[in-house]
Image 1 (cartoon, rainbow, N blue to C red):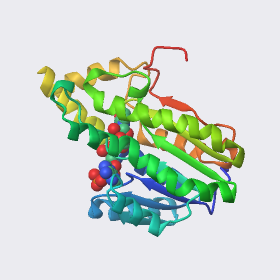
Image 2 (cartoon, protein in one colour):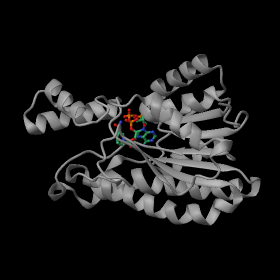
Image 3 (cartoon, protein in one colour):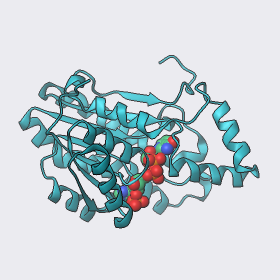
Length: 259
Ligand SMILES: NC(=O)c1ccc[n+]([C@@H]2O[C@H](COP(=O)([O-])OP(=O)(O)OC[C@H]3O[C@@H](n4cnc5c(N)ncnc54)[C@H](OP(=O)(O)O)[C@@H]3O)[C@@H](O)[C@H]2O)c1
């Protein structure tokens, strides 16, 4: 399918690995010029070269921590007028809420709520003027099915979800859409490190814990990052202009509810 976005410009945050990288790859394969951002420059520059080689697309990179003002400014200086914005950053650590300090909460809110909101604030008026904008926030299945151990993530991402839910209705008439995509369990570094922590906490060996996790997913497997990237690219397409304010769950059927 021709997504109708060749020649558009995208900022993809948290894109040297995992879901962000897969999204950048899908966009580049559809002819979008992508600017990818992450903190570690070595891994980021290698990812940019690999995505360019794989897709034949235009891929630039800026090493930046998108949870800081300086990091966002560096990204926006390199791509001041994006047509597409993918908001993404690392998730907060799991744990027991009794041990979380104010600093832990502020860090989670900076990372999984405010960074996205400030990026949206910086780019949305230009999108409105140009009558095209696609914003996708990578959040989590925890938004629909929260688990206490990921309370920092649940709290911060619920805040972002509420904010963009309102804003998306306000900008839809300008052909600017804002959606969230909620990953269930995708085979990435983040999932592996969470599983290692859960295994240690429950004194289970990692292989058993992962086998149990796969069994709990109706699809019987973890998701592939490419499957996630393809959904994000579609939501950024010219054909997806009537989808906005949605929270789209990609979880292999794990959420048990109908709606
Ligand atoms: N994978 C899953 O199953 C799953 C499930 C639910 C939710 N999620 C959420 O989805 C998001 C992406 O997960 P993932 O599995 O793709 O993670 P991942 O494999 O660990 O990749 C995270 C990417 O984001 C970058 N990054 C992290 N913090 C950043 C920051 N402050 N500024 C800029 N870049 C940053 C990382 O590079 P650097 O470290 O070099 O910056 C890396 O490129 C996370 O928020 C995660 O919690 C994932």
